[in-house]
Amino acid sequence: MPSPDRFRPRTPGGPVPPPRSPLRPDDTDAFRHALSLARRRTGVRTVFGGEVTEGALRLTEFTGTLTDSMRGLRVGPGRGLGGYVLTHQRPYAVSDYVPATTITHDYDSPVQREGIRAIVAAPVTVRGGVRGVLYAAARDAAPLGDRTTAALVDAARRLAGEIAVRDEVDRRVRLLEAAAEAPPEQPPAPGLDALRDLHAELRGIAQEIEDAALRDRLRRACDRFLHAGIETGGGGGSAGLPGAAVERPRLSPRELDVLSHVALGCTNAEVGQYLGLEPETVKAYLRSATRKLGVHSRHHAVAAARRHGLLP
Image (cartoon, rainbow, N blue to C red; front, top):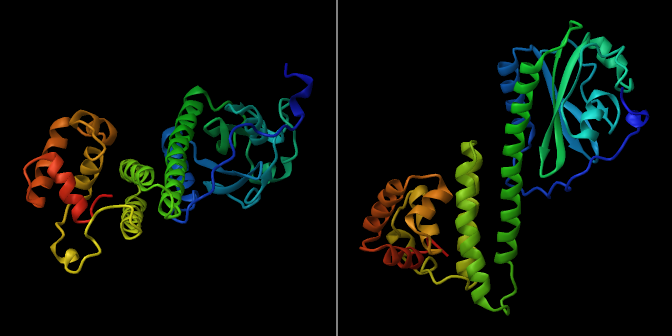
């Protein structure tokens, strides 16, 4: 039997989501992808969900619904099934929504208009805070079962991983902005070390993102920060010299990823661990880069890449 305070709204815990960079796409695309995955994995026709903003859940994404009765619905902590999940940060299910005694009934009207009865909901938990909720629902009053719940939880977990990567990219972009905008009177060495470290890590993070367009935008942003650092005296490259752009070797994104980590002193094994590559693959990229740069060692490759303005 639920405790007497089961209906008492509480503010969801966990860290506040970080500010979003201009590079970050709207997370609704990630929610749509997660719901599509949930529908395939659960076999349930009706799935929906949304993000948590300003402490409340807003339902925005729907697949398989018959009406718009729940579209845009704001679900507060502790209210209804979604509010229960938002507050307790764990999956929860009811086999028949309206007569259920373990949840409040603030949203019975839109749920009944849609004809939903059995529902399971799973939180999208990132760094200890709920960032969204995914639902799977049926129009029969029968438990959806453990397999459906497990599949929905897996979709929510994958979505949480994608959001966590995007959050980390936002954090790194803000650090890069801070490094690029540092006052010139600050000692140059710490700023340069930070820029090199962030440049390498941002390229590594970009490779983890499945969205090819977002990955390319992040790499271009990384290059812009690199050139800003050079122009303000943060690096020793020759990118600003006449003719340098014509003579600059054309390295592939993966070759630059490898070189940026080699520049930090990483071994081939460590580079492979950071970038998800086998050591032999790292060697192959390194050989290709040194050949294009016209040098014969990894250290000379890093120095040549910096001269050409390809690394900070």
